[in-house]
Image (cartoon, rainbow, N blue to C red):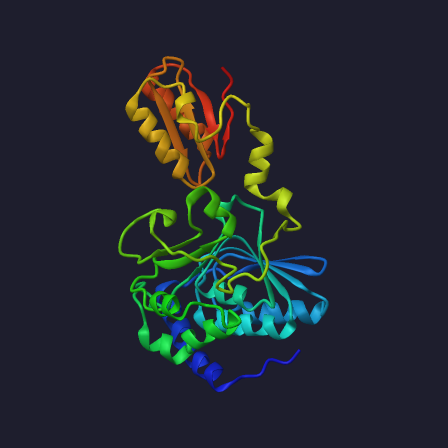
Length: 331
């Protein structure tokens, strides 16, 4: 497999050099993507700092039979690396699949796959591919870099000509890197009414509360197949481990607020916020039906924090009602 540097590639390399300099000044310890190998599958996860191209080449040199690349939970990073690896994947003819979220330069790696799929590693509303422009160290749009990189033409080409030109023009012009055009699996439309959402990055909103776009990932060439596949390490993912450790009790569906054992409108309102929070998360209630506590975030024991907050309010022991997407409460 030979990577050919086109004129646009050389332009992007120049842009990338500038981007790496910005990264060096803004953060001396930007992490690189982690690469895990499972037979003829590799899994790339985490931020993109510009060193990934060499790691990917080495992996393919060691195993020319790699045919599936899983891209997991990456907000992207170095723009040039996304283009380079995406182009390499297309030349290699591999299938790419998204596990969790894959945004910015990661989305270009994903779009490089000859065949492109979603996984079922995470729930539908937590699995997406997000597209936007190029940004400086402050998160502001770098329009000149977008033009030099040929991002518009690149997206049209690597979506196999299916991308909506007007929508692409909108997303490459998003002013802040917090915004993106996010494509979920088309099946999400069955519950939310839509599966593509456009956030301008100017407001803090849950992605699925942003502008709904009446199209889907298959129509626009983001994916080539609606199958959802399992990553080879799926059973070891933290959410999967927690789901086995804290299985659903059968007391109620997670979104059935009427079953919530609370006689407090404020508590019910907080539970609605809990439902929209990312995992890991936990919601606790007191026997009094008047007190509650919840917590979400990967940097702490959310179960313990939820119980602690509830018990501080109630002055007595509380029990867990919800853990992640399961109701674990037993009446």
